Length: 155
Image (cartoon, rainbow, N blue to C red; front, side, top):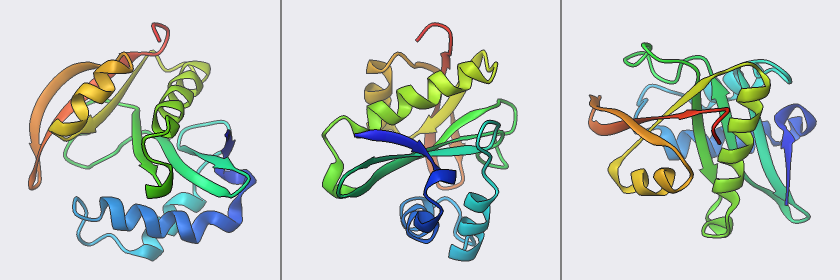
């Protein structure tokens, strides 16, 4: 498995946008496929916002993004590890953990001291196992979420 910048795989933009809308559209019911694709096209190579893909010889396995803001209701913290997505065929094989670690390392390289993410309750223990800590809990639209944080130099 390798992790590459989205800029190195522009042909995957439509498939990645579709996967993101399907996976995360519940939080953003007005979010369209076109908007998702435009957001991904706006990603940077060596600055925030940026997105990385995990891939193997059979194709892309998952993605993760580093964003300034991840949702309009929680702009008090920044930046965010966001849009962690692993294709069903690659789940349970460490792809997500490698993407998370890669994002943390890249955030540190960009001078980010603390990185945030949010998730629902079933994922909290998984992130704790990767070194994240609970920052706060709150309601985000229809979802009860946990905001988590990690010091990028501690990981």
